[in-house]
Image 1 (cartoon, rainbow, N blue to C red):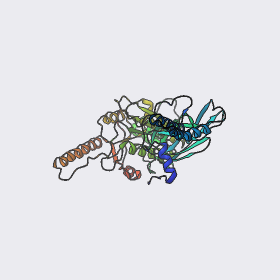
Image 2 (image 1 turned 135 degrees about the vertical axis):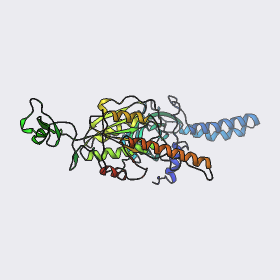
Image 3 (image 1 turned 180 degrees about the vertical axis):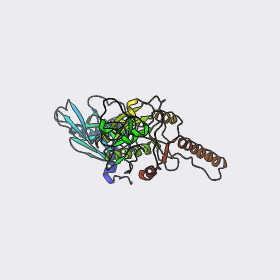
Length: 448
């Protein structure tokens, strides 16, 4: 996508507001001094007058004093006729506070004061992941158009607005913070919703594996006192010599849990793709596909603080799921610690678990072991990124690359040997291509 570039006066205004640093991501400058102080115009005219007076004293020629008359007259003419405003405040309105990456955000800064003022001169310090596209300055407010580049929870930055008096001789700076914004990842395109082998599929939804009073038969079990006699399964009773009754599935939708590996963020040296970006985009696509099928979806992120959200349904639940894990990337700060036990409510019994991981951190196998120990059917969606780049005639590098690939193949083989389905989702490819083989295979659960 080509980034819009302001032209002409708009580009100059943007560069001036950013102090000629368009990609600034630093901390905000020190707080501005309170009260009114001399502006650039007063400093320029005062400097000219002082230089002229000094030249007259040094040379001893009185006519040089005439050179100081012009700036002094301009200073006198620019003096305000009344008192300057005592109170100057600024408020920022940001719309929207939630958006997808690549979308635009509009900011309006309204300046209020108890008197007459002159022009406004904004100075902008942008936060991480934000680009300033447009700037418009009007008598009482400043309009900004920002573009958010990457998903995450970002601080938009701060704006220091210089408010000048009517003559432009004095200025007063008021600072306004733009607050935070939640930027959602663009979901990968996915329409397929594979299900575990034990679950029958219906048109538009998948039923859960829990026992209940539904209408779909999932098996038989020994008769218990108090059960309905009309549910006795006579063929099974005859074969086993004991009363057997039908077992029904609960009349509820299936549970799907998307588990995100945020233990490491691997950047591909060739394409520059981030494994964390691709992980969240694939997860967003999976969540949206299952919610469209009216299934219940939950999310768990492992790495640092474990974040999770119990399975729920509805299109509005998509935004709750995504927002619950946005703090993984907050103002470009990435922190990861050890991992602990997964909370039991995060993985309901029989829920299908998608583990989206680049398979670069060995600690993810501890998580897979926990999921496997709870007998949940599981699919590992690998994000194959981060393959080392080689230089020409680098024999040692080629050997290292072969060892790196062999290690990846060994990890995949170990997962497949344990009965875990493994599919690869390459950056930029359709997620349906990775999920299609699951429609022809059997997704099994583990054993308790």
